[in-house]
Length: 137
Ligand code: DQA
Image (tube, rainbow, N blue to C red; front, side, top):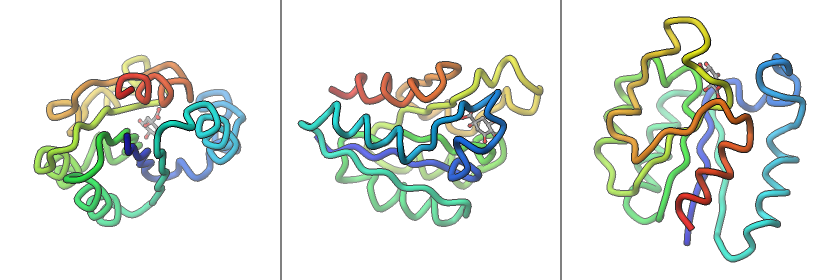
């Protein structure tokens, strides 16, 4: 299996950013642990703060990978372009959010990704990424 985790804006700051909401573990530390846990799968990670770069990555992986785990972060709630990219590709996308976005501001309740996602996992912290991996294995 070939899977990729695609993280959107500000998720490069995980561990430092609002640790009360997003936890104190950096994504790099977390990712290493998860890679060791699933040696049988090819698991990649890509992060960008740039909307167009995320779209290009979704397109590049979207016809050959077995699964995309996408946390588009703030672009989830704003980006028609990322939503269209998810709709355009063949690879199933599992949408992940670290926090429970429904327990937060109203603008976080909308998602341009959910209508075309295979499923959505939110509110379980970084463990949500692992649950998404489990859904593919
Ligand atoms: C997030 C939730 C978004 O509303 C927010 O903009 C983020 C992170 C999450 O993982 O909980 O940056 O996607």
